[in-house]
Image (cartoon, rainbow, N blue to C red; front, side, top):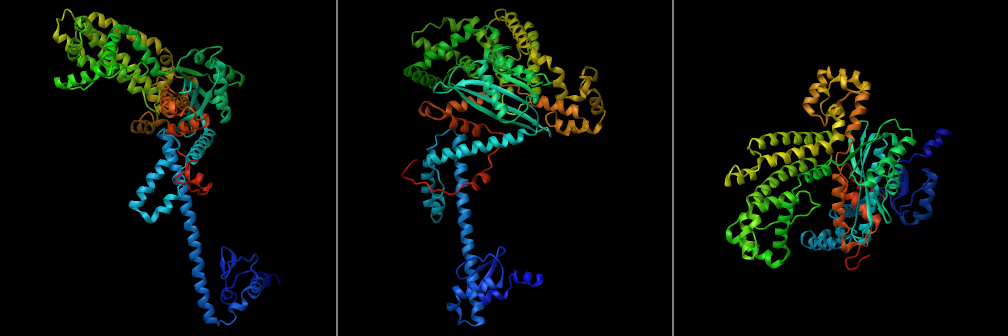
Length: 603
């Protein structure tokens, strides 16, 4: 009985000609009307055929039936392919809308740019591939659609970050606050996490709008929410980098003090390492030169030339008549660190042309022609160029704190060299000083004065970077573990460090891949060294990330887009700042259906 039942429930080939049925995806399907039969039994199939189609096909013989079955099967396959193609085109249209929305967000353009882009796409399609016009028309790029897609993309990135966070063995935070075009305080929180494979993830953790005051307590509450929402334990927090503002650095009521108090409440064993951004520190060191009087004079000259349109046009024409290598002088902006050196160098190169132009305008140029001022201008140009070069070394994403500290140490060593050379009357690394010294008497050039300024600058670097000097031993464990004195290393890693330094295979690997990649090759049998490496790799050395983020914020939320919501601004910045992660567009598209947006209307 069981055997007979099993036979009746398996589809037989002869039923195709007898009852005009076929077998598709484990179900009998009628070739005439497309109905599925739930149970593959001959009685059910025969009953359907006899009640629905018997009268129409009863006169066909077996040959004719076989031909009809083949014809119907081809038609069914054609229908299935058509539906598959339609589904595929719909998914492609949705993916395209996500891709365009991501590009709009990255370029800080308004959401309604999607409608403009679609108009351009349709016009290009009419000329290049008119047969695909419908496929292009299916791509929905209305304002509301682009806004929704942007939020979906940002949510997907955050979900990926949360998933990665589950594997973090150490992480650090970088926190800063700035106001947008509508004077709303925006708090950015970046995370740099290291997983068990010692791979680094550096992403925006949170972007919070603060519509009231921005005290240390309120900043801490927002940072705490960010850490809690992503479900990260406080005992894995090893570093905190800020811009040095009182609300950030206060030992009791500031962010730093409250984070430390929170870690004590959570019974965290590790100690929080706090850094003031290296790039900020480097920029502040330059103020120790006390040469503002030179910069003030230069700024006044540039402002006179550029503040009025007539003066500016006449100056550019004057430079063109003189056959100058340069066509203009740039503005100086205090918040743009590199603009200082650029303005100084340009004014130094054009010093003679600037004096001549000012004289035609009836301005006194006696100060600009003084030998003392020219010497100070040359020195400030050269030292600003060196500081700018260091600043550029410290910028960029994914920088390891040990490399940044090495660049600062190298600069401090250079300062000592330059001081000694300047005392000897040999400014060989100061080209502007060499140029001026060749034009005036050697006795007039104040080498001793400039050597003293270099000494002051070196002392300021040592003072401001004392926190980093205190971590020198830990930095060396990451940058060159094979050269570390084992006796000076922490006791919990001494045994593993000896094993590492005596392993020739690992030494060869270190020489081959370099310090940045080597920690990944430390074997699991050295867990303390791996933990130490993870903590150092997770450290933020600078706040470059949120300086870059706030620049993007200024371009995104302009005076023309003040009504941009906090959610949309947060989503745009999460997409534009993403580095380690990329949105899973395939997953997002699979959850959406195609919606065609019109060209003549906007949402």
